[in-house]
Length: 125
Image (cartoon, rainbow, N blue to C red; front, top):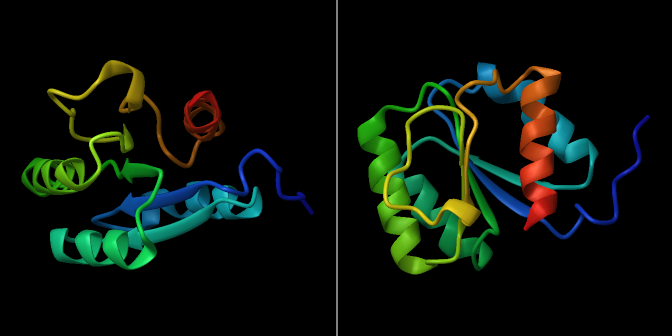
């Protein structure tokens, strides 16, 4: 059994998914490391979850999220919290600060490489 990592326990992630299947292993790995994860599938659900939780530190966008939905969520949550860090396994995020954005579309989210890339990003901020 993996113990939660102290440096990750205070992290709250909002995961935007279309089909949850490709992201299941990644989200489970994050939870095992102590990361709090909320999963949503629409703009309305993302805004509701974000506001009800008092904000998240990170937004993760799944590989099959339609670009239009991703753009709306990024724009909406970015207006609420301009410092929100974002990582995408799918659609590219234009006009985002480079230091607060990870483009992980070259990785499968369930692969060890994809999980490692995301964890490095989470730890770097």
